[in-house]
Amino acid sequence: MDKIELSDLQISFLEEFYRVTVKFRHDIKSIIYKKLRAFSEASDISYMTDGCIADIERILIAQLVSEPDELFNFKEQQRKLALFCKDKTYVRRYVLEATKSFCRKKQDYWTHGRAKADTRKNETHKAKKTGRAARVHWAGDAKDINNWMDNLISSKLSTTMLRPEVIEALNSFLIKMGLNKTKIKCFWDRFDGMTFVEMARQDPVKSASADKYRKRFKRIIIQLDSHSSEFKEILLGRQG
Image (cartoon, rainbow, N blue to C red):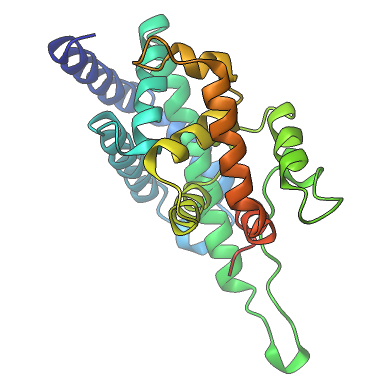
């Protein structure tokens, strides 16, 4: 796909997004009402609906205009555009799922803010846990990150199931561990269940082999191993 075709596709996606947010505004508003009506902060549902659509739009545009070096955003751009090419109704499904995600973030934030810990009683906040797929494999040697990652990949956990703040924290952690952009992309590709053969196929170097990516991922695991506990804490949403 050349730049003109990509630009046309990005514009078409945005146009469909704006059409969907107008035509299905009632559905968006209904989700927000059902999930947030118990919170006094959401007393004005119309205002919350405008804020939700604006939040989705902000994230979407950042992804659609991202460059290859913007690892997660660019990967989301490619995924969304590919799904849109196959099925134009994808945008509606995306908007409604993003609305639910918006509501979950608000629920977490408002609940956390209300349930303030009483230090006199030695109370602490209970951190929100990630999905069961991430928690179920917590047992075992804290250092055995390789097996733990294999279990996560087998459980079909992916970036679409992680909160944006967790992804951002993980990216910062990977950079702090000294991983370059190539290794970080390999990490996220593998996290999303991509095989080493598939990684090699998308490599611009035609002679690239699956073994190249297998070794690259092994080096990543070695780099993460000495900080496996911190890595798991971030992934499970328990970082401070």
